[in-house]
Length: 348
Image 1 (cartoon, rainbow, N blue to C red):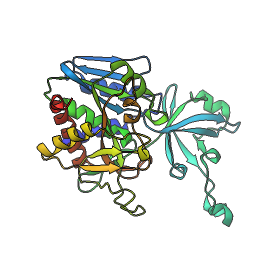
Image 2 (image 1 turned 30 degrees about the vertical axis):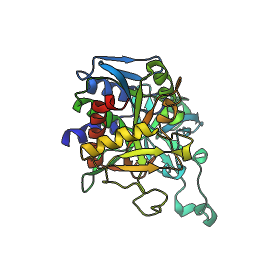
Image 3 (image 1 turned 60 degrees about the vertical axis):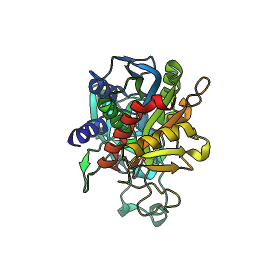
Image 4 (image 1 turned 120 degrees about the vertical axis):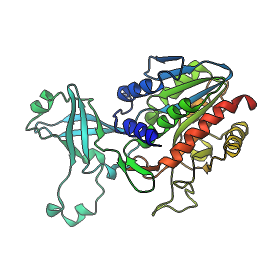
């Protein structure tokens, strides 16, 4: 468990918004070296690690990008406005500390706002939109900002560190989807499969499932699993009927997401994953969700169709800088994927 925690920490504290995933890609490549036969990077930036074997072939897809921001405009006084990259609930951005990934390296900034001391009553009750927020890097002018190596298009991420909570629970930014990446890596390390496996770190999932589209087309596997996170509804503000998934009750096998607009998992894939979990006494949960989707949504529509499933880690506060999960769930998720890869020949 300690090694799995360190792996997740390394991945989550690394930075890489959609389109700028290089730092995570390097970690993934280093971790898989020695466990696969070939690693290559395609033209879009996806990492494809191949463990050679016999048919049927299995693709494990874990997106390596995180939601973030991008510099949109710098005013004469040196304040920076930004565009959101990925699906933010904008109020979680206000007054966060951020890292500007400038040409010369990371620089700190803060998303500022007017203090309550000088707000009118109606201002306090108003929802502040991202388009009205700004980043303060301490500069006196636009020229100073530009001299720092910050320009239009500079990527921005939140500045958060991995923290241990009680009961093997941890919190950090970007567990969506560095937990899925950690699950894929750990599964590859644990498996002794005779079947061909493609471990794929996909790019730009948060902005349109782009990397999954191109890699699935190129590889055309016999079956696929996307590893990701699922909304844990076991905290105040969510009714259990809307999100019955819970932390510490095991990994999640998706039955359907986005009200069926994402993926309706084929019965053959459900049987494969559920029977594997049962055979190895791996606790799991099932999910039918109204919103959200994963790389599986596009993989299963590739070419003439690829049977695809999703194994996720129940995670609280998804798409915020303080996502929370249980390492116990992550460990079981890796075990489920590892064992499923070994049994794929019985089902496909």
